Amino acid sequence: MRLSRYFLPILRETPKEAEIVSHRLMLRAGMVRQESAGIYAWLPLGHRVLQKVSKIIREEQNRSGAIELLMPTIQSADLWRESGRYDAYGKEMLRIRDRQDREMLFGPTNEEMITEIFRAYVKSYKDLPLNLYHIQWKFRDEVRPRFGVMRSREFLMKDAYSFDLDQASAVHSYNKMFIAYLRTFERLGLKAIPMRADTGPIGGDLSHEFIILADTGESEVFCHRDYLDFQVPGADTDFDNADALKATVAKWTWLYAATSEMHDQTAYAAIPEASRVSARGIEVGHIFYFGTKYSEPMGAHVQGPDGKPVPVHGGSYGIGPSRVVAAIIEASHDEAGIRWPAAVAPFDVALLNLKQGDSAVDAACEELYRTLSAKGVEVLYDDRDDRPGAKFATADLIGIPCQVMIGPRSLAEGKVELKMRNTGERELLSPADFVARVT
Ligand code: ATP
Ligand code: MG
Ligand code: MG
Ligand code: MG
Image (cartoon, rainbow, N blue to C red):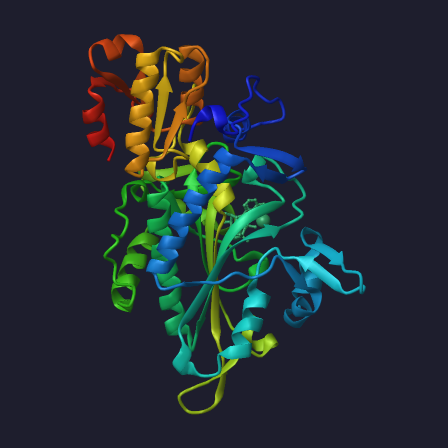
């Protein structure tokens, strides 16, 4: 992508309304724009990151055996009356009337709708287990939308829903998601700790929140320090091996970790003082097992092995990709701007032409741009007629992990200069060596 033809509305001034660093940097880097309170447009740079985050989430959901579909954002109130949540949900739900005066709503979550889909088709225990997910916009009329996309009213959610014949197999489904979440957050460059959590309006009795430690987090959390160095399960995890998954989840839940709602002061005090972590945290994911909470009232039964109808056992599993984008920035930035982990960076390489209009420099840049692009490297080529200083600042602000600079001085030696955004390391090397390095 040539920056001269891209749409990257960088802000020079620090926006006053932004209270936390991720919000400030997302506005300054031209990633998002607020359209109404808590409602954001994702501009091209932000959109690229959101897509990359969603892709990693999707890959790990698929790896664990979950199946993607796509449900609508608008739902019927009648569906929510079946579960009893239409009245219970309260003011966070955006209620809408259509021209026929039918009561509709903008979905804050999809337990009811997926249960409706499930009951329409699945009739036998032989078709279980089943885990269906989608990545779709949600709306919650938050009392206090703030911190940009961290707590917005419209936000993206990956929500998965599992269906099992009984509690034991439902716990296996829960454990699959637990491990998929550990892997997902690790790949996103985040250290997420699963913590015992309150189940809230979703209901149920087994639940963990995945929390990133950050001073700007809205949750108060308590955990054992050892979790910070735990090894995340590998890509070769056998998700069908219920016993192995159980052992892994046991290891990850054995030590103390709880949010303030579930905090047990006595248990926490039993941790050796040096290992206690009491901090702020950002909830990036949340998983629930809720048994037959929806299947009973909504009549989602399957025929069991003995021919009798059984209400299925369910769980739901959410991650907010839009909040995750902000959480990654909270965890990874410096004075100059964002420092994207490579896996979610909007571009792999920023190519800076330090003397636009110098024919030798232009030619070298064009050639490198073509070569890298042909090899599938995503390059943002800063070909604007601007000072080197402005180009350095932009590249640092938007946080592309690898910057390559070409100017008359390095070119005279047949070299380009490489700068790694995350470490600040610099190196002079030939264009061919650079290409070999990044491909
Ligand atoms: P919170 O405690 O922050 O209000 P929640 O517990 O209400 O979140 P869940 O119902 O568990 O949220 O939804 C699953 C995930 O969706 C959350 O873990 C979070 O990543 C994301 N999410 C929830 N609310 C918002 C929001 N207002 N803005 C952005 N992401 C959100
Ligand atoms: Mg909430
Ligand atoms: Mg919560
Ligand atoms: Mg939650």
